[in-house]
Image (cartoon, one colour):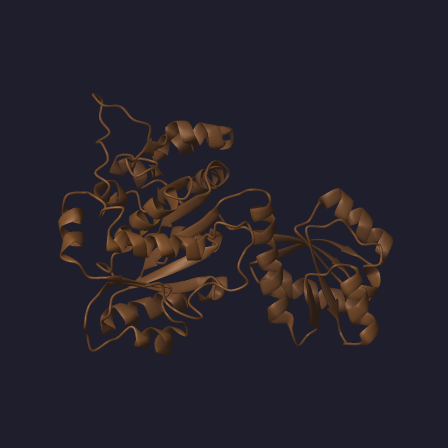
Length: 374
């Protein structure tokens, strides 16, 4: 599930080429697939490799290569350099080495832009650092809200415990009532595509499509490599994909988080939940997901820890605050979602709109920088 932006690098100075290539390749978010020393080599590399992004000094962009995203890079800012970048239609302009981190982030974002222009789903991963904060509740209700806006697939990447299946009261898989499971989709391997995946999904009354969990002895064998084709097929089969991540920050959780366009960390208003979420985000730090992470406050009640503390601890206001209601406990105990026209569902409708806007254009900033969804 680890997706890297494929980069063609076009710079005249060999020593700068080595430096930039090293930074991009070591970031874990981009990979240089070719280098070019002049404009003709650049055009040919783009034609043959069709990269996600071109990183080039403005002087080499006069040929205007037909690439998905073009980023201009120079060691010294000048009027001529800026004008050349503008003429080439560059999506960003960066100075090396001062703005190398910004360059890495822009290259990684280019992959998400290319995926969106190709009609692929927006992927939202939901994680909680502490048990009991409501990850399954948030994932299922967000998926239902997304299903009210289009098509939504919910994938439980912790299938051994099958929390999503219990929350949605899905049918039991047995000999008398056979259903396809996640293991059946995995078994298709390279033959798995969007049509094959759709045929293997079970549709909930809310419109959510899910892959039913296999028996525990099969589920325990499923890792990141086995589930990657399922996630990719889901991205081609739906408008939005919600990933229910395991609590433990292991290989599978990190792979799902890295694949996501949005990563929601769920907390409740207590010190233990904040501490666990902080540790989880520290564990995610090598993945450089900061621009994709936002916090959801679930089961919010009056407490010494307040919603305002979220910004102080995590650096952003919560993207959504889900209130505590007695009806929630009653619904979850019965394997039901809260009413689609209720107050809680409306919160998730607004969260869905914030995360996956109806218009095709991607927002320049994730919500949470300005105000919580309430």
